[in-house]
Length: 477
View 1: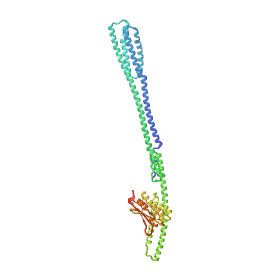
View 2: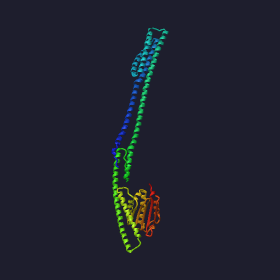
View 3: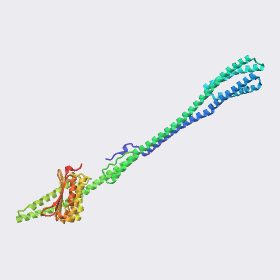
View 4: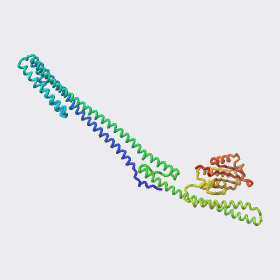
């Protein structure tokens, strides 16, 4: 039965290739995009760290230094009234104003840091307006009593300690911001590494899946179709060419299966025609011989009747042989008519082939008789092989050693036994099997099926009888 492959949707080779390439491309693009995004985040974090956070930390440290310089210069002027000590104080004020402006820009994105910067500015203003400037003015006016100087010193120290505390808080905040940026850099790097690792793993999975898929839907079905086509090419026309896998392979298998069906149909028709021709020829030969024997039997009976001979045994035996010939002819003709298109070569045909092959060596045509359903009883290849081997060896010995001028081959199939008998009119067993090797070989061939073989002299009339038999119930299934 021809299957309609086109009615079943199948994946084509081009579609499979595009699916594999598309999957790999998507995985590669997605992984590359994730890695790029992670790298961009890392770059931005690094830029903010280098352009804002680290400079802000340096600016806070520098601001602390300017305030310390101011406090040192103011305290030295209070002790000595030397105008040189006011130079660090005045330079510190100028530097502080510049650094405060820079810090406003650097910390503009963080409200907490900006608030702490404002607190530092307020504390610095309190120290300047409540301690530094009034004390410097008082010192310029004249000397200050020790007890009053000590009180001024403690008052200024208290205000400057507040300024120090707020500077420390601002430094801590800048340190926190730097730590946060470093964490973002590390997180971005980890995300990029994870993206690259996931991309590599996904690509590996896609490649393994692609190789497995190619093996499943391309390589294995192609090998299966090739194996089936090879078996058909070697003569196994009953081997179905299975279609599987991709659309192209299925179409190839479908075309090969159609070709196989056509070849089998053509071969069946050719074998049927050859069998019918062969059966007609054999039947004609046997029919001609049988007619001649019936004519001879009639002459013999006429002669016996004229001579009033009481011995009719030869005529009875000849009648039996003629009946057997007729039964064989009718059986073979019925068998050919019942199976005109059967593509299996039966045992009867094979035996006919062996007999025909032996005709040049024999120099005469043996009588061939089939009794019973021979072909139906011998379906096993091993049994047919042994029967043909025994027949071929028997005919070879008749041709080369027996010096026979006639032979009879009879193959009988009963309900429980298959018997091959070959009889000739030669010089006997001593010539045909002087060493007993043929007897032992035939017995071995029959014994494997539970049968027997015997070779004996035909009797007073001369010649040899080969009998080879096996039980049908012991044949391998």
